[in-house]
Image (cartoon, one colour):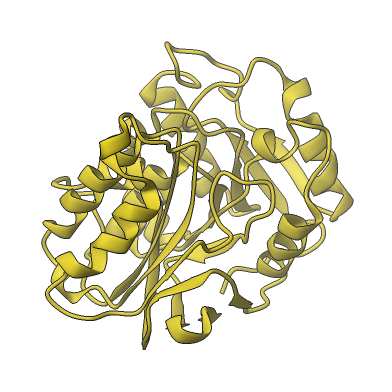
Length: 297
């Protein structure tokens, strides 16, 4: 179970996109300190390499260093963006298995979190990002409450969204941002889908692209044994052309493409939105789609 205590040290890293300066995450660091945590800044946290927060090797070096340090109890990512998948070949997975630590992140960090889970079964936390959550100078009380429940080791029971396909099931929750999760398909870093509950959201993609990416997941080995699906919010995902259909059209069609009925919730409060649930991935959950309920067990 994920649990952080006052006086715990936590690593701060930029495994995906870069930040311009420490001022961009200063309010977030103050927030972590207000909880009694001690942020330890990675050596390469301000690096820039193209669109990323440093070279692949340097970004991995920060992560591996935190993983090897017994005093560091978790790792918080500064930002989303692009590039976390490129770090995966340079991580020390034996080290992660011996010293499992949750990585807190959102958006592009989906690749990092799920890639690590695929290799080690180490859980992470999706739905919180230092830069994103404090970009307007205020941190949503909704998200804050959910995050603090996760950090204190409490098991959330959440009612959110709408029923797409009714039913109940149990499985380990994986996923996050659809486009970055989909990028893992066909690699050694794609989690086994058998018996999993998929969490899926995205931002800034055309509606037809959402349909295309869902089709690729549908054709991934193991998808036939997925236990359930939770569709979060698809922010700014408009049709490219009128005939393309909306994202909701893509989601409504999706159950008809499956070869079996599984519980599916949509419009769940998770994604690139201010008020979202913060969720451990790699942990076992129970889903009751008829009641729009997600419960950690």
